[in-house]
Image (cartoon, rainbow, N blue to C red; front, side, top):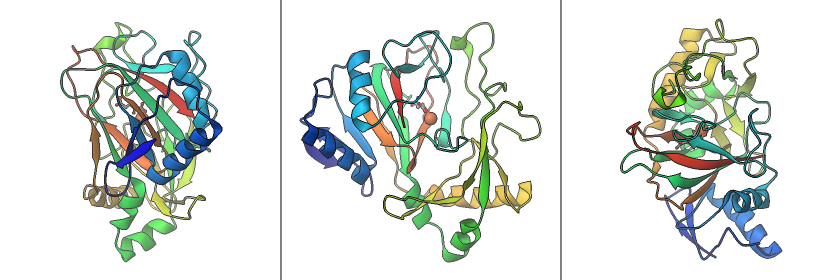
Length: 283
Ligand SMILES: O=C(O)CCC(=O)C(=O)O
Ligand SMILES: [Fe+2]
């Protein structure tokens, strides 16, 4: 295996790995160490069926329980898709976010595999939450350090619920915006929510990591809503300055990343073009 860096601070393309074949114990450890080092790994042009992707995912860790639905093609397999009835997030732009910050133990790693790819648009963008921290000046760091944020995801809200006339006609309302589409006051009582530190320390290396976004951050401890959003807005403005990686998908691309340390987003695409990514969530 060889690793070619993608940006100055994160990401590597792996050459010489067939993720569809069983890996030696040594190669498995090399892969886990590379994910710790680079936070994002890419393998291009690989043939991978659902069973192989499921097995490859377990090299990194156990796959997370799936949302309720029909039995998956293989353990842990689901789809981001506008061509499948069981696909999530079928259409629309997605603002930068981390998945499941609303869970006490947020998802550690996400993996996507390119199945159907639009002719243009629909890329997945990444940026480093450590890089975002490095953009904050001392005053902003001091302000952010002591704050906890409430993250909430209202799965029952109009923002995420496909209309009854079919998922293909639906855009998730999670595009770039200055406020979360969810509100603490109106959210369903069943929606998952958790207080998280605004600056999370990664136990692996004690690095400070910024944990906030315009999609799921809905309240701030000890600060009123307007004040909290002003702070969030200031941090997000600084985040604009960090290096991004835009992944332009081709069928057969396999991408996995550390969801605790990188934010991801999706660029717009034509809803009439087919887009399916096979996805696993890894704990
Ligand atoms: O469709 C994409 O590019 C990313 C979707 C996403 O946010 C996710 O799978 O968590
Ligand atoms: Fe996501």
